[in-house]
Picture 1 (cartoon, rainbow, N blue to C red):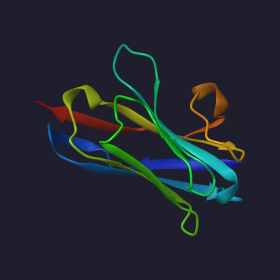
Picture 2 (cartoon, rainbow, N blue to C red):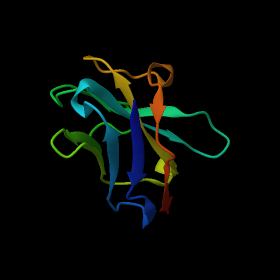
Picture 3 (spheres, rainbow, N blue to C red):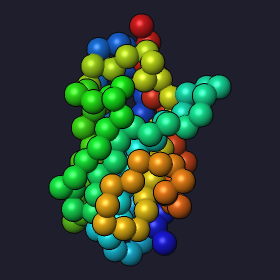
Picture 4 (tube, rainbow, N blue to C red):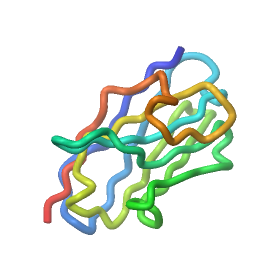
Length: 124
């Protein structure tokens, strides 16, 4: 089992950057695929980005491709989401998620472990 804690959210202006972090505790972080999801008020949770156990494979939602970068440091049990050129429509609570396995998962139902979320607000 793995426990996840997000950090790095905040209030920024359109065009700014933020770096989210997800700290994992528990065993064998490197055996987990990781992902970022977000949920805006009144909307369903949506996929943002995912990374496989080694960091060698990544996948992004079309809405963030070219602006966001997911990465992980297995030695430090952490995952990051670098968000550049932020837009007001990126405003949401961002969640990190973990799933045991070797592939990249993009569905929220694929992830049994979730953090509590961190708020990102982008003003226009």
